Image: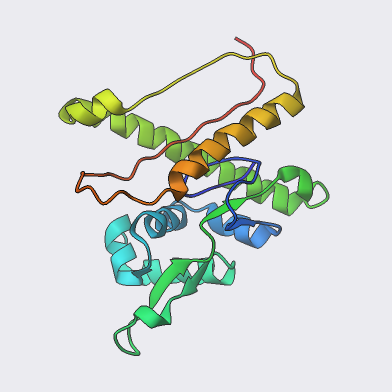
Length: 202
């Protein structure tokens, strides 16, 4: 599985700027709700300061600065000095547009496997929480409520066929993610799209 903070968990590539995580340190950095939210904010808002991220994620500036340090040490964010107005101002951006990893690649490293599971569990909980929050507020946004979707499909596949399906779905999302934003004046909101496919019995 992998974590793409523009979409979310997947195990295939499709984004030329996608980074493959190969160490437990980066996975451990992702397994924190504030750090996960900060990466999402950097994805949606673009480069930001610690103060901007603190306000966006509801935490103290000192806490945001600490989490940025952890993300930086894990190689997930970097400074954007060209955006600073003076030496005191520090801007941060994501190193890669998206991330992926495979637990199979960590088979001999139990620490990395545990960190991957923790990161994936956190991401799943955040996806569920986001979906529930939307359902609770959907009636107040009629246009978006009509456009939002959820789908569930039962398939009979081999592992190779499931991988092929994943590649097709990721390619579709990547195409929409990479498209230039039309300059048509239309109101656009950040949209969270996530999907999962795994063996399961009714």
